[in-house]
Amino acid sequence: MLNADWSEVDLMSDNKKQGLIRGILSLPNDNPKKTVFVAVALCLVCSILVSTSAVMFKPLQQANKAADIKKNILAVSGLLTEEADVNSLFEQFEVKLVDLETGEYSDADPATYEQRKAAGNPEQNVTLTSEQDIAGISRRAKLAKVYLLKDGDKIKQAVLPIHGYGLWSTLYGFISFEGDFNTIGGLQFYAHAETPGLGGEVDNPRWRNLWQGKKAFNDNGELKIKVIRGHVDFKMADAVHKVDGLSGATLTSTGVSNLVNYWLGAHGFGPYLKNMSALMNTAEK
Ligand SMILES: Cc1cc2nc3c(=O)[nH]c(=O)nc-3n(C[C@H](O)[C@H](O)[C@H](O)COP(=O)(O)O)c2cc1C
Image (cartoon, rainbow, N blue to C red):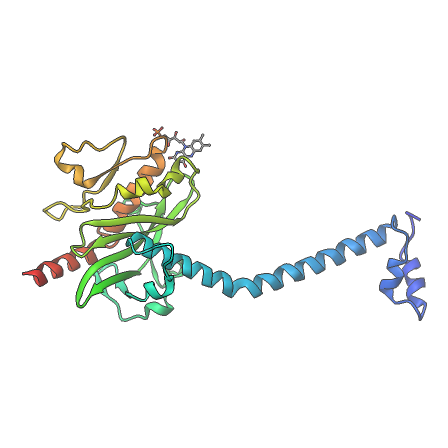
């Protein structure tokens, strides 16, 4: 039977009462044609199932992703509680787009803008030189989203998206600033693939808390924030710009330090932060 050829199938399909499929199925189980037929049919059914569910669940996945981003923005601003209604709390934020080169707001609609997609589109991105690219991202979108928490006209907090390379992966997250656009409110990553227990400790709330209250810039407006190796010596005058490195994860720590410096620097949000802190200082006088 193993050596049976397709003529058997033809014979069976000639039979008016049996279709081609029935003909193949009626072959003995050790018939190679039946084996091939069953394998192909199984692959076809499975691929239809997988692609149908991928299409069906895509809107749900996108909604979950969007909810997760909102949750992280609330968390980095210290507004997330267990019982929080993420969507209604997030409505407090005003979302704007910033032209990173000028540091001015753009008229483009933030609701339809996808920054990660824009970063891959040559018409919407800029390529970084190796000197500029301390975050290891190669290119960045021209426009970036900012999330502003306001009290009347006064900005209480600003949340900025940041990303860059650690040891094994690109870390995506947010950094929040108080209304002076210098004091850091928090740092939070929502996606990375660093090693749990080593680089993955970037998610440890104890480490994340170390960022709170640190100053990104000194009195001369120079960017000074840095993750150092070991512990910060609080007797040093520049302790306010320094954060402890993660032990056993110096490479991830350096990556985080570099990506924060990129995004707060001249080729990231630097021009925007300068504009905003000048504006806030003038408003306070
Ligand atoms: C399996 C494995 C996973 C590692 N994962 C990380 C990591 O996620 N981040 C990191 O900085 N170092 C990681 N390391 C350690 C680095 O190779 C390197 O030794 C370390 O960053 C040096 O940090 P230290 O000087 O604080 O010990 C890993 C090492 C091993 C063997």
